[in-house]
Length: 346
Image (cartoon, rainbow, N blue to C red):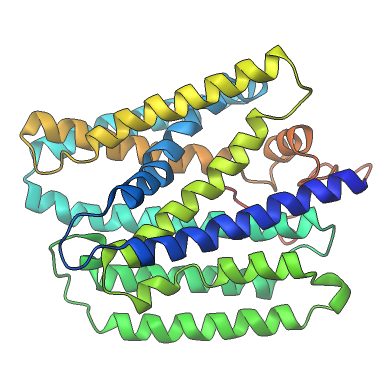
C-alpha cells in the first residue's frame, strides 16, 4: 500500500514538472517574429506531437487491448482507417487555401482532446492520493477553462500559424474573460475541499490543468502560446504509456516490450513528422499531409475509447497495469458512475 502511494506521487510530481517545464521551455525558447524555432524546441515539439501520436500504435501490440479492439472494430479499426483515407483524399484534391479553413475545426478538436486529457490527469491525481474524486464543480471549471482556450485560438488563428481571418476577433476578449472566471471558480471549488482531501500534489496538478490554456491569452508567438501546450500534452501521454510499457517484473519480456514501444514511437514519429510539413506541397505531398491529419484524428478517436475510465475495460486495464494510479474498485462494484469519474486520459 505504501509503495503504491509512493509510486503514484512520483508519477504525479513528474507530470507536474513535465507540464510546467514544457510550458516554460516553450516560452523561453520561442523564436521572435517569423524565425524558425531553435533545435531544442524542435526536438521537444517532435516528442510532444509526432512521437506521442505514434506511441498509440504500440497499444495495439498488447494482447488484452487487441482482444478489446476485436470486439469494437468499428471504433478502433474502421473509423481510424476511414479518417486517414478521407483526410488524405480531401487534402490532395482541394487547394492549400481551402485546406487552411478545414484546419480550423481540426485544431479545435485537437485542443478539446488536450482538455479531456487534462481532466483525466486531474482525476488520476485524486485516485493516486486516494482522495475524493473530482467533484462536478471542479470538472466544470477545467472544462470551461479548456473551452475558453479553444475559443481564443479560433478567434486568433494566427496563433495556430493559419493565415485566415474568420472575422471573430472580438471573441478573443470574451474568451479571456471566461477563462479568468473559470480559473477563479476552479480555485474556489478546490478551496471548498476539506484540507485532508486536497493534498499538495493533487492541488498542484489540478492547478496546472486549470491554467493549461493561459499561454493562449498571454503570448502572441505561436510557439510560446501553443507550442508549450503541445509539448506538455505529449509528454504527459508518453510518461503514462511508458509506465505501462515498463511495468511488470524485470526480465526479458519487459525489455522486449520497452524496445518495441521505443521503436514504434520513434519510427512512427519520424514518418508523421516528415508528412506534417507537406501542407503546401504538390497534390501528392498534400495526400501524405492529409494522411498525417487523419492519423492524428484517429489517435483522438482511439484514445477517447481506450482511456475512458468510467468504462469497464479501460479501468480494468489501468488497474492491472498501473494499480498505484487506478486502484481496484470495491467488491461488487463493476464500474464508476459517470458523476464520480469521467476521466479521459488521452
